[in-house]
Length: 219
Image (tube, rainbow, N blue to C red; front, side):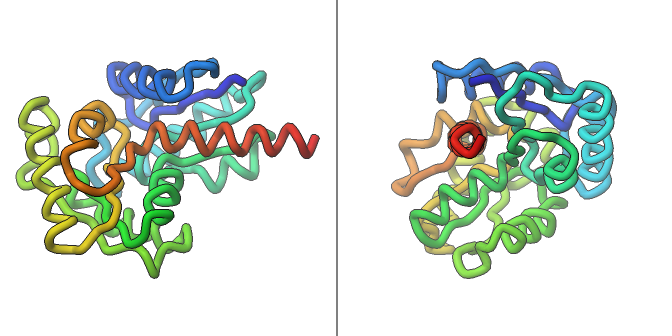
């Protein structure tokens, strides 16, 4: 099967990292990646998320995903997922949608991320996907998101501390790492928290493959 991963920010390095992780999660699939044609290299608030929404729609209008079995939108706000489902002929999966679905299967869950200005957007996604009874809220790493993201070792440490707070203070039975650009760091802390830590990109490729298989069976 062939899947197209769309990175709603402009960072080619982030796109490459997420594609690499998706390929590791499903080596039997062909997974291509493409970055937003305009916007910002890191989505940290509602304004950037709105720009990413428009960038994804413009990208898919200019380059329809012909020949693919599924489309993955790889930013945690799932920008333009709803609109794409009305405009493309293949299943569309958001990484927040997929990550939250896997986490909810374990019980009450929290999201851990670096971006304070996206807390409301994350809560809206959780409600929209039907997780009102499972979602415990978002736990943040301290400090400015850009500075935290710029320090790889510091990012891993900050995410791990936030995950442990989500477990000890919020009672989370599972944690979703909230952001495609956090994918590499998420992998490093997965076994150190004591509850399942859901990496959103692998979760998305698993859900996308399931949907593609179902779509193929239905003809």
